[in-house]
Length: 118
Image (tube, rainbow, N blue to C red):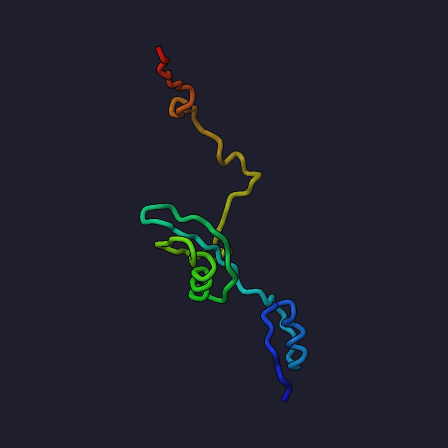
């Protein structure tokens, strides 16, 4: 029986599987990526603080807790599978164009008069 020493570096997975005589996998050996959002205080916004790689949501929560909220205050933690996040294309400028001229709603153009010292 061959002695197998596990190494956490995924670059060496192929080498380890070759030692065991196991065929190399056809798929990617990387776990899915999960985006991590932290809420520092009740009623505050959830802020993206980074990402973790995990096989399932439970493990992603555990890894997010260990990596991102050990030293910072946190009241709520969200993890979202990166594949489930959809965004607009940067070339799609027409999506954000104003359809009507509503510049009167913007607060630009107002000037506060500072009291002068007399």
